[in-house]
Length: 103
Image (cartoon, rainbow, N blue to C red; front, side):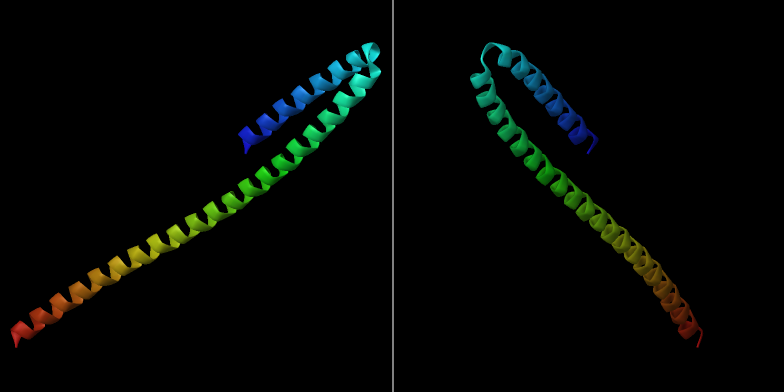
């Protein structure tokens, strides 16, 4: 997400440069500058919407990852408990076998 933020800041910097260039162009050709400004505004809105969708998707993936990690932790804890119970069962079985051999 830090990378995404950095990329968005880079894009904003490019658009600031484009706006500055349009202001300079406006002194030479106001009509052309207005046309280009409209096109840039459309691109800016599209990029902003796309970035919003990407951020939402990243947040969803992070939530999914957290859930997966939690499930994995639970699975590992259950596996460890099961291994411990199997060990206890084997020990009890061995103890019972020894007791039976005594009789």
